Length: 134
Ligand SMILES: [Zn+2]
Image 1 (cartoon, rainbow, N blue to C red):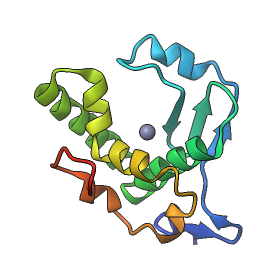
Image 2 (tube, rainbow, N blue to C red):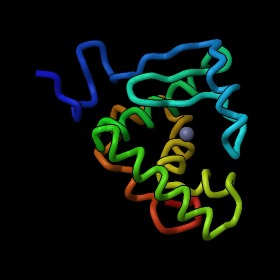
Image 3 (spheres, protein in one colour):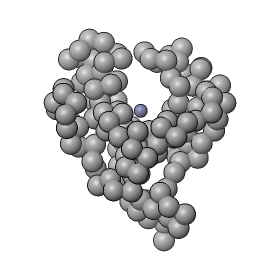
């Protein structure tokens, strides 16, 4: 049976489906408060250019956050944390960077082995505080 919460399949860490050199991030950037380079939605990731290892890892972290929240839960919480940040910081870009989902991804995307040892729901450790020492 397909297990959403299982981090690895036979070939290693489970990764989303990457589409490189896509126009979708450019189109979405007109609507979003930030310039989007790559975006993850469901099991797909669209990227403006070619993905480097770090961005690939960043988007894979989001993919695992979505898997463990059955996608819809992550989208709802993602919007919730962004709006919460917007009220707190009154700045769309800071609100985006302070979301626990983004903080987990940015803090760990340089560690290409992160997903091998990541604990389920690890983004929860990035809630609440505003410092980067977590
Ligand atoms: Zn991100």
